[in-house]
Structure formats: structure tokens, C-alpha cells
Image (tube, rainbow, N blue to C red):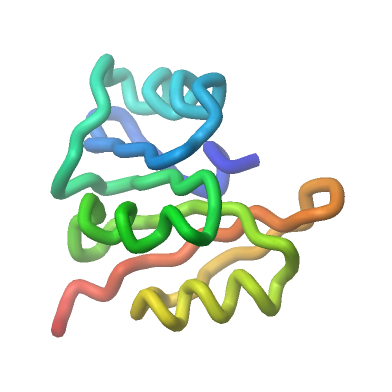
Length: 106
């Protein structure tokens, strides 16, 4: 689900913070790249809400951040606090996976 929400495309620069290694490998496979980056990433997966500040340092303007939260309200709070535009929230078992985009302007 996280990789699907990430919307990664071939050649996208990707980063991961605290994400499950299986999810990280799947994201790399989607993009056809072999290495994670530490900055200017088009897509960043954060394993938990407390990872979002670190993920934001890696995310390029216009890039997409994907993470997991307890519920939709928590996803909205974390995205808003990070200055992101929440795009999608999908229930995954007892939690939700969410994606948001970093604005390109100030």
C-alpha cells in the first residue's frame, strides 16, 4: 500500500526513514534505481510520524511523502504540522497509510 501511495515512477530519487526493508526494496524496484538518496528525493517513505521531520529534510519541493498513522485525523495533523498538502489516506488494518505533497513554493 505504501509503495502504491508513493506514486513512484522510473528514475525517481527515493529515500526512506524507518521504513520496513521489504517496502524500501519494493519502492526501489518501482523506480528502477538501486540506491536510496539522502536529499532532494521525489518520494520519501517514513515509517512513523516521529520520522516525518527527518523525512522532510530529504524531500524535494513538489515531492511526495508517505507514512503510517493511527487514523485519518492523526495523518492530517502530522501532514499539516509539516507543511504538507494531504492527498490520500487509506485504511491498512488498524492504522492508515497516507501520502502528502510538499508545496513547490515558499
